[in-house]
Image (cartoon, rainbow, N blue to C red; front, side, top):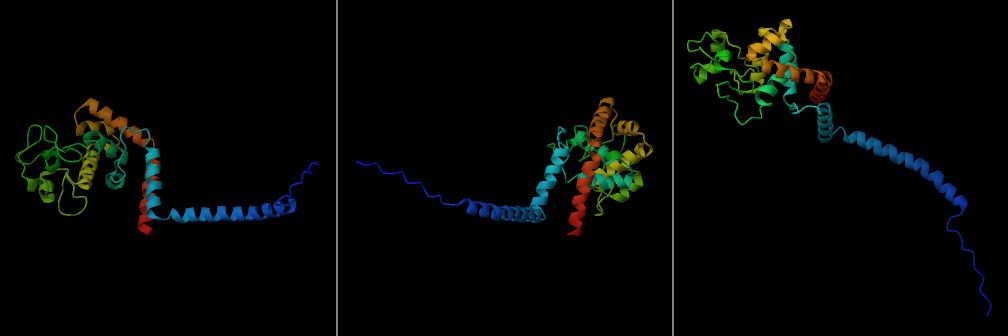
Length: 238
């Protein structure tokens, strides 16, 4: 029986057609890449993507921190810093040491210090208050504690930062501004950081703790401030 001759398989695409397709696909691929890039740029303008990028930047800058500075507090530190000539990073350091950025179960210490930045009532309202003596807990009524007029009368450090008529150590803005006011007058505005920190809490260990966090935050302060203020500017434009 004669063997059948092997038929040569016919190519589905000729070399010429293949070359034509390659030439055709190159600009198509470039166009597709360009469209995807434009789409991504457009998506980044959406608030959800901006928030994710913003959060990622802050997390990266704070990678070496044992406890991240909550982003919502940073603009408050910066605003208080500008008003009282106190580094915002020092305010953040005090907030970290005093109440772990307000994450503690209670904002009242065993000795009676109150609020986000742990003010003794007599320091907040003023030591010339008739009930103030000893460690400064005093017998100050709740109404007096938050009354700006009473605080002014007795020479306290409490500040009504948001203009609601109340100087409240449990309000984060009031507390941060009050701390900035205290630290500024205690010596920070004159460059005497250690003196001011020790005045805030009479402990050498406390001073070292504050300075350690302050220096850590200072190492990336410009970058953090840039990211936060840039976001605030974008929000304002919208």
